[in-house]
Amino acid sequence: MTYYIYHIPGKKIGVTCDLNNRVTVQQGYEPGEYEILESSEDVDYISSKEIKLQEEYGYKVDAVPYKNLKRKREKDMNINVTEQTTTFPCPVDKLKGQLFDNIGKSWQTEHGKLHVTPKTIDWIMKNVKTSMYNNERCYVYNKAFARFYDNNNVFDKPTAVKCSKKPLKMFNNIRDWAEQRGLYDQGDPKTQLIKLQEEMGELAKATLENDTPEVIDAIGDMVVVLTNLAHLNNVHIETCIAEAYNVISKRTGKMINGTFVKDAN
Image (cartoon, rainbow, N blue to C red; front, side, top):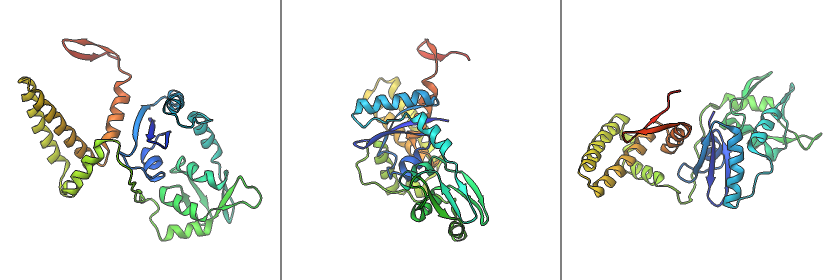
């Protein structure tokens, strides 16, 4: 599992293993409106790094490291199911975060099997009630929850909330440009792949001729094509870059004839 440290400028630095659910669906920030500062499969490293970055950027520092919070959430999300209700082990104001950390969790009731999905989280948060016996617990009625299933496809992804904030990166500008010109509606990955090969030829020519302005132009064009190619494959280029860096950052090796050759594992 890969953990990401994300930065929402002026707001916060946080950690998640699911950028779409945590940052876009839950908090309303589209790719390009936040940046990925670090990624790693080592939860201990990422937890320590998050706190250091929060200090460096001047944000409020989390009192509990991410690794401890993650384990606590996983341990604490032991719901209690009765004939009439499903009770969650946290107060209402903490429930949404815990539910998003437990996407995919399911449990059986007399009215059928219920699941935690982005769509059911919306329903739960609109209908949850604080327990009359314990303010640190809350519940929903199983029958009403099951009726929601009858009229909705709970596994559909909800539409992400758009944010009006100025994007951090050029990637969002590129996607906007492409969308306005119908590239995403009428284009396809194969066409973009051919375009990428054309731009690669331009880059090769410019490099061999030591034509710096043309090298800059070709590299820029390739980044635009790669951004659109990623989008047409239902991924974001920012995620591709983060995944690639997470792999290469662990590599060791040496330079041979102008090329970095990684060590054999």
